[in-house]
Length: 514
Ligand code: HXC
Image (tube, rainbow, N blue to C red; front, top):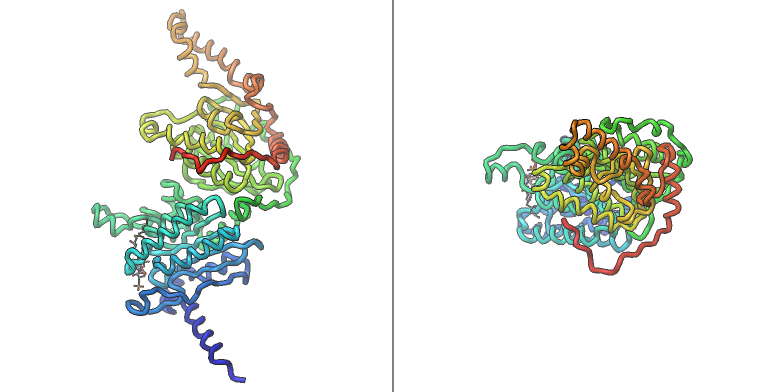
């Protein structure tokens, strides 16, 4: 029987939609080592689960000013990742460089709305020249529609951006509003104004890589969270990240029965912290040893390296790890470290991921640059975030917890549920030398041998404060544990806190000091 002509027409239309900007443009995309939008979606999702929506939409201007492209530069729809529903959109660079039009915005907003209504993550695969110049204000308004949804759905469903090409102008702001930004090395660039605009306005000559490549956003600006060596790796990273998150803010993160013994103790931890307080050790070793083997996914590993944040599993449950790295700037807290930790604490709190904090910090970084840069405002964000977080919170003080660093790093009376200290913990307002210089200035000056007197007083101070016993005797830590016990102790604490119920007082929203 001959095929029904209407079926044939549908097949033709679908073939046209699948051709995107045409064979030449697709070949150009492949020649750059890049996948097409549909190939990316297929790579991201579980095999064969993608269902496309609105493939026949075209730009209003198509009929008159440009050639008609079905889909209008974005592929949208839904599918699954590890069996859980996700919504996805992928900009199609073969159509006007993936530039955002009014109708493209309509398509994107539609999947964002569906993701929100159905409590499922929304993943953006970006490759775009920003607002579509031919559409003027309509393209700008289209971005506003997306940004509003990014903000309103923040903390309700996970939003992830994978940057797979240029992301200029508005294409950079939407990722900045999302939970996670993944870039591809040497392939994705993110900037508000590109090299040509910069040259025209300021005369400065700069290339895309050194303006907004992955290295810059991973190590200098802090805008990106993870980078991958290839597109496929970036898409796999998005899948991996989602495995730690619930689909929405009323679910719990998925549980993976642990392969790693919950009672495991690591003798090496008992020998990790050097006796000399000026000698560093590597906090990453503590984290790797305590969490389920191989489960630590560090976020923003190259930026503000004096602080460490990342997702892990412990006893099979997702946790957010926040720590200092004493091997970098002695683990001091500066402006960037404050911002990095704050953002992460808030992400974990909105997605019901308990927080485990490891503390070893001499305090906030002193200096004019930090004070003038607003370290008070930035540090206040971290205080705010920990105080506001209602997820289970466990803290382990491994060594220094001086002054502001003690208070700000999830200390007991910021609302932390269980606080442990290692025997190497030093909990005090100031380090010994600084403290005796202030407390005993006159006595030291009057002494026959001021240097010897300073040393004697510092030793006395250390004996009193540079240990966890004063804090334990006054209830400021819950217990002092052997370092090797840390894993089972954290697992026990988190299981005792699993049903924590800590409703916040009703309010419209707080006023975090941004
Ligand atoms: C319409 C665009 C476009 C745009 C690219 N194209 N950007 N069309 N609007 N914004 C088209 C090109 O004309 C070209 O069409 C095709 O996409 C591929 O672009 P190329 O330039 O050939 O590619 P490439 O050399 O890889 O360079 C990519 C690029 C560059 C870096 C993105 O095209 C670029 O700088 N574009 C402009 C970026 C920009 O300034 N956008 C506006 C930002 S303002 P043909 O037909 O030749 O293949 C903005 C406002 C929102 O977004 C603000 C919200 C806060």
